[in-house]
Image (cartoon, rainbow, N blue to C red; front, side):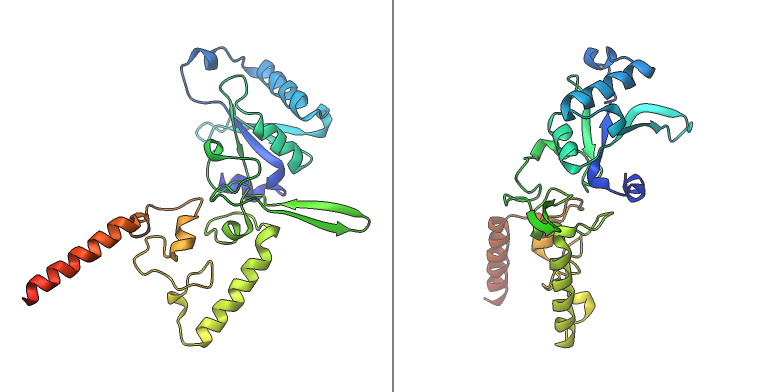
Length: 242
């Protein structure tokens, strides 16, 4: 997925239609070959109201044989609005699912809302900029709020919505290093100090909003458990003294 997204010029305008590996009847009844591609084209036309010459579809490639594989169908659309419209209409034919190439995590549709950040309950970024005499709407290609987007440790394309925040963090990090902190003590995604026990080598805020992260026992532990463990350690220490 990372390699495909890196090769795609505008990943926010592209998605992947995935046929699940299943023996369910609804999957087995899907056509194959050219008939399957025709149904995909008709589906895209009906949802986006675009002509077939306004978008591109391409079959995936089997990584073992190198031959075309209809398990994955790549769809390149004219705009992010068309991509969102097609993405929000899934599942298709009762079993096909979609993955946006601009998403860091794979198929997060179960917690996807059109207006909410994928990683928290804040509103997604919607900036309106004036270009010449037109008003353009810029949205986060990762479907996140500005803060969560800027804190991502993994990603294949820079999102315009968080560039300014990232630059501010870099400037703050420089000030922290000038004050005596080393680079290894500062979280690389923000201007906070790093938690040394974090498995992802980040601060708590950045660790918890990662779209792609390793399990972190230190940050995943609840506040109640941490307090109980602290009290237990104090109790054991007092027993040793007395």
